[in-house]
Length: 136
Image (cartoon, rainbow, N blue to C red; front, side):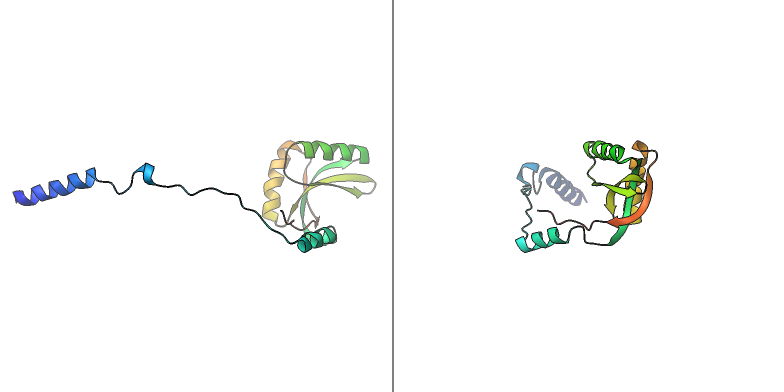
């Protein structure tokens, strides 16, 4: 009985004193840059097809008014630091500023909730959108 206790005690002590790895011995993977290499043909095709798509999606309308005021509203939005494109469209006799190119309702509603805090008059509208871009 005492031999078993002694062996168990030695096993517990040896397990506590030995470690498989120390924090210093664990190597962290190198973080690198990911580079996308696009053929010049794909890039030129994208530029040629830009604006010719009839893709349906959603945008958030943040302004309705005169053309001069719409230009100012678009400039203010683009300078606000939000990472969305802003478009001026004619809605006779006025002009509207619509932002974003959202393919799903869920994505559009997420940004709509954010924009509603800044632009209380904002509306979520179904609109033709630009297709996703290929980034270099």
